[in-house]
Image (tube, rainbow, N blue to C red; front, side, top):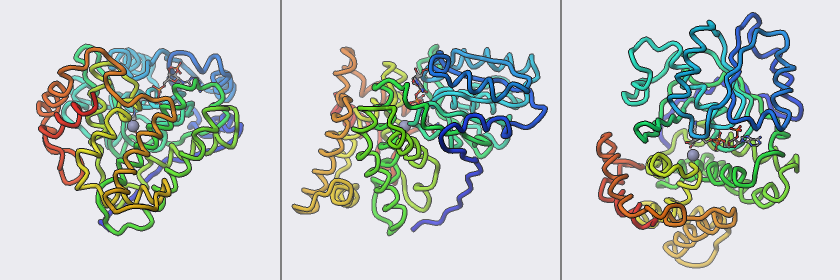
Length: 386
Ligand code: NZQ
Ligand code: ZN
């Protein structure tokens, strides 16, 4: 097992009717900016619950943060933060609203010229404006981690940022919010969280027994609840399991002491930047071809995964490993998610070259565990996903 340090300061408040607990979590005397997305919270009652809980606070609102939070829109929110002397940010939404809020937390205290530099120059955030979240869409784990991904339409870029100053102070997870999530977004949440576990697991064995078992446990739970929550998002127990699994998939715990990959995410972000494909679906497009291309490097873990998560007992190590890939792709299909790029855009030709070009231009020339994915590999992996 590799050496590690682990510190996750986010307080999780989980359960039925927990949104009202906002009242005691936000520092008294704070001037709060409530940030939200396209308006789903106004239809499902979450907005009213938040407003009730914050009745005694000085509160300003900023709505309209789109899926894949857009830099230009966030810059309008930044202006408001400065003009109104905001002291606390409250994100009410999914990964996009939370990530947008993390960017604002960092940008509000940024002393450089152009906040976009935080993303292009990999400036880590050690201190941001304090913020909390009310999660409305289980998927990204952003509610309990310190990274964010921001999009800039002008340049068709989607870049990551992070740092120890970007953990939410608290996150409220009330599984009742799941009832209004459309099937497409539930499927996305299942596929994204499942792939988060894969990215931290499907590398090579380092004898980290507990990390492996926790990762396998999360994947098994996601597989078990997927059909139930897709069929009935108002099933509270399924929603509670869905939510906690997504959080646990990317709160840093299973990544400790083990190698991680993240090549699927790095390449996937380019597909969202180029074509606007939902984040989770870009992962489903690339996972099968990435694992097939790097089969030799990953086959020990692929076989272990096939046996423990999918109960594949027959065959040689190579056969089990191949089954592991097939089962993964079949799982995405069972969620109603297509796994070929050409099923999302007719303009797929040339994508592999463009993804390769973009990664090379940013110096991302050796991604994945041990840096095994080089530009020529990116080309082949993306091409095989057409
Ligand atoms: O905008 P509204 O109207 O709220 O609607 C949203 C949005 O259209 C809707 N929605 C959310 N909660 C709902 C709901 N609709 C009905 N009922 C509810 N309770 O769902 C749509 C998608 O929301 P979004 O926040 O975009 O989805 P998600 O949580 O999947 O976030 C995706 C973003 O997170 C980034 C992705 O790249 C993408 O930009 N990621 C962030 C990560 C992180 N910070 O750790 C890791 C991930 O790998 C990912 O990259
Ligand atoms: Zn993801």
